[in-house]
Image (cartoon, rainbow over all chains, first blue to last red; front, top):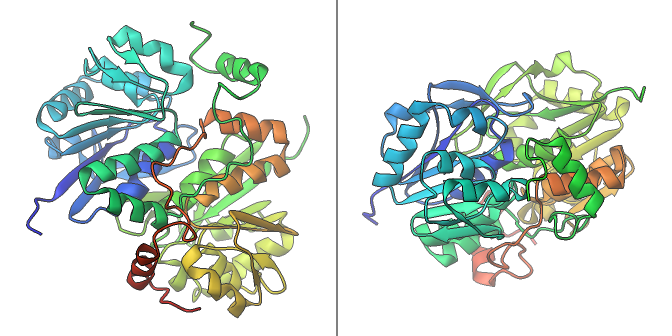
Length: 217
Length: 217
């Protein structure tokens, strides 16, 4: 009852991916005695990848120096964010002081640029999985990977699975199960093409060629 | 190649649910030759349910009178939105002129209040399923239901499944499959409690009692 409030900060940067943040937000906002805050280098609206959505950062990262949980999305803007020393320093400090450092999709690469993947097992968006080695991580193909206080997720929608597992760690399995029921997360994908292991090879190749991750293996 | 652009409008109102809009947005933004626009009675930031997120409406509904696709989320604010004559009139006009009228979660009840469910098969959030009959609809327990130009989805996360199926209707199954791969939608829920049919009965009861949908059956 007197548990200290859990501070969860979700990082935004220009060209973040909407579902990368929306999935974990929707799950973690149901945790009792916790607060989820969207943060960016400055307060105010931040445009998502594709430009269709602007989400408002309620606080500057300088105002939230020591959250318990940091969640880093992916999206095209992850690449530019790697070059922002204020973001990199904030991630390093937050990781040192916090309980969980979390990424969704290519957010793992931003954590890598901050040096937070060295010697760790990690995962990321399927197209980017070969990039992990450059940051000293051991790639694992999984929906999400817990290694110490580092939690990394596969692409986009994997943030939902990860966040439910994280909720179980932050509170209890029973609460996480109730949240899963609350968001009616009983997925029935219309097709079975969500994994590159089962999608048609030509489709996998085409998507990779259209992306910033050319065939790298 | 000269296909007219598909205009997709996602309605926002105070206390909308974030994943209800984030799921379909993330899927449908990948459709070629289409534009997804967040709309509300007025332009500007709109607070989501729980207050943690403000999403910016890029256009007023009066500026987007005839979208091809209208998507209506749920969330606590759906109840207040039913009393807004401007929203009700816009939904009726958009339904009459458009190709698809779509809801996620309790957004179906707002469509019902606009008279758009009469004589239709429909679904909604599991807690609200008994409400559908009040609006003249036949309730179907399914992730999503297509009936004519009406598309309704179950709760929150079901909007992802629905939007992939809708993408197949709007363009092609192959494109929808590629989008599913693009968002790595290969769900692996940590638990099997996402449906009230399989969650523990006590959990189902507790969530219902905490909600605005008391035991109604």
